[in-house]
Every structure is written in C-alpha cells, then in structure tokens.
Image (cartoon, rainbow, N blue to C red):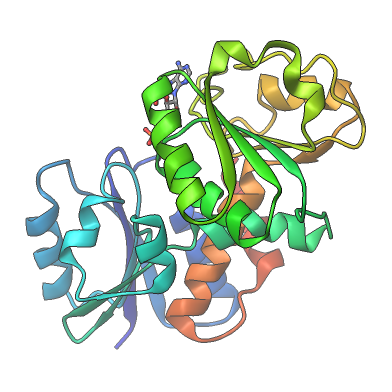
Length: 273
Ligand code: ATR
C-alpha cells in the first residue's frame, strides 16, 4: 500500500510543500502521496488522532502549530529540543518522533555556495519561531555575534538570552534603531513576515556593499523589496525559496532514508510560483 504524508497548519492552501514532495514522488516512482491538511488552532490533538488513524507515514508542521506540536511527540530529536519547535514528524506505528529541519534548511544555501559564517557579525530582523531556528544555526556555525532587531523589544531580548545560553554573543534592539548601522554587519537576515504582502523593506540597506550577505526567508514573492534593495547594492543574495528547499530536502531524507533530489524539488517549486 502507498505511503501518505501531509503538511498541517492553518492557513495551508498556499503551501508549496505538496508541490515539492509530490513532484519528487513522481520523479522517483515512489508509491507515496502528500496532502495539505488544514488543522485550525485549538484542534491539533483531534487532527493528530485523525492522521494516526489513516496511518500517516510522516508530516510537516507549520504555522500555528510548530511549538504546540512538541506536546504530542513521543520522541524528540536533538534539533527539535534545542529550538523548542518541530516542523517534521515521523510516525512509527503510532509513536511520533519530531525533528526540526528549519535550522539545517536555513544553513544549506551557505554550504551550497561555500559562504563563510565563522566569526561573522550578523544582523537578524525578527524574533519569532523562524528566527529562533536561525539563531541556533548561527550558534552552531560559530558566528561571532548576533544583533536581534525586532518590532517588540521584549521578544528580541528573550531571543537574545536564548542565543547567549547556546554560546552566541547577542544584543536585542528595536528594529527602528538599526538606522545606519547596517554597514557593520557581514550577514543581514530578514526573519520577520514583512514582505509577504509586498511591504517595503523593514530597514534601509544604505551602506551595505558587495561583500554583504543578504538573506530573506520570505519566499513569496521571490523578489521582496528587501531583496531588491540588496541587489541594487550588489550584495550576495540568498532567497527564501532556498531555505524552503533546504528544509524540504532534509525532511525528505528523514522520511525516505535516501538523498533528496534537489533539482527535481527546485523545478517543482518553480512550477508553483
Ligand atoms: P515565524 O514562525 O514565521 O517566525 P512569528 O513567530 O509569528 O512567525 O514571528 C513573526 C516575526 O515578524 C516577529 O518577529 C514579529 O515581530 P513581533 O515580535 O514584534 O510581533 C515580526 N513582524 C510581524 N509583522 C511585523 C511588522 N508589520 N513589522 C515588523 N515586524 C513584524
């Protein structure tokens, strides 16, 4: 019998994960299917019971369940316990094991492009769930320091405490206080949701140069205003879809125990844009 996979979240109809995974099943002739399953906030337990009933093989977890899902896991991978959030689950006869592939997915483009993180100064915009996985990634790869700039200072300070706890020197500031300090950073990452609705860049990029790495985790639209401004300065760009593909590839490898066909995934993703 074929294996079934899913992505759960709400809203879920714009998720590109079904496109990516289904295309790969076709490419590799795997007898599997991947569905998008809307589970509203507050109905996670019932939703998971339903998934267990249909003997789901594995599933991805997205907004708003990434943190609450931790409660329903029987086993927790290291990546997951470190970040405190889960985005990939394996179901072994009713035993659920959780992983977090956001951190590795975030780091993948640096590895693919051989871009250095060791000893760099990082400016991170945002302090939500995604930002937490990113902080863990920079700590793992031994960045020198991170400045976390956020609309709500308290959230920036909390994330900065987490960063220090895992060994990465950190400061929290308000996003409007970034001002002209962008030139002081080697890597600038947008992990806020600003850009999803075509809003202007959350900060000015005046002062960056062609050595600055600018990374937007917003993948839709692909060319956010933040990315456009970085391009004008000739900066090194990493697009949000690169992280999306990275985390999908890692999830694929966890579920199927084989290397993910990255190019087929990329082709499928671009069909979705
Ligand atoms: P995700 O899981 O994608 O990280 P999240 O946890 O809801 O989503 O985090 C969203 C981030 O975008 C937060 O840093 C949020 O700032 P606050 O902590 O102040 O809420 C930020 N954000 C959302 N809308 C924003 C806006 N209009 N301007 C600036 N920052 C915004």
